[in-house]
Image (cartoon, rainbow over all chains, first blue to last red; front, side, top):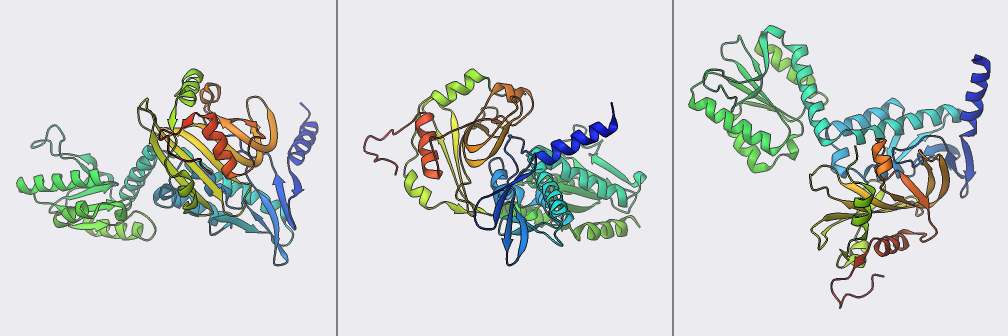
Length: 258
Length: 156
């Protein structure tokens, strides 16, 4: 292998795979070698707007996502976080569903690379099935608790070994060695909220001394009646694990531990 | 993982399906989403198989649309796209190493499923349609949609 020949081949092939075709006034389709997982090429356009050039997907990326996902699936929870991060990282803007990146200082090549990376990162969310999204939430929850609470003070997936040997009333995490333990529930859907409600009622019947905390993936998605019944018995709740709530949850846990 | 063999895909495409009622009217009332208009119609064939008709029209580019016939797997899980009628954009068949830039029809295949690609990653160019309505008419004709109500007028 001669590195200079390989480099030359790389340059020829990669450069040849990018081309422009004019389709309208000051509007060009950017042919490129990057594909969705169904073989369709990323839709990229170069357009002139108000005397400056922008790279745009003309709304195709979200439309493509909608073949596999409902809009609510990629506009909330873990997936929207991934999309927001991708847009922010590569300075891409979401203009009413059209993703655009203004070309600054005639840096057309750099802008194209950034735009492509953003689109590919966004399309990765299709690999997050509902089941995987759930586990991502639970992993995030475990990560946050592990960062905040020492290992010898926490037990994930706890159940009362004496009263409940078959783990019918599990708790996602038990923070122990405090006057009364803190039971934490990481909940994502109505069914889990109902289970947590039943578990807390059972603990009341057993006269356990405890405190309780619920962390929702997205509290707004929970049925109002289900949530109301849970609220009657749960002590403290956080509506999500996102944004500033992470530090609020950490602070709350630190107070409990200390 | 292969969810459906080529024979099963062909059977699902061939089997009679009910023409969704008021389709033309529903097309007039597609829901506005981020950058596109959309309509999803669920229905059950006389065989008992459950399907979804997925219709998309890009707001920024009228040549960018999609009409999809998808199947709900008996075992649950994500819908399986049997056929997709797409507007004009570049496509590459990764396994055959063929490229084209045209209106095209995606079809689910066993071969692509076996490679872990999207089930409908194989596509062929088509001159049967040129916009959303003609693509929908092509799909309805190709996938054996039938009016169960003799009084139901034509679609468009």
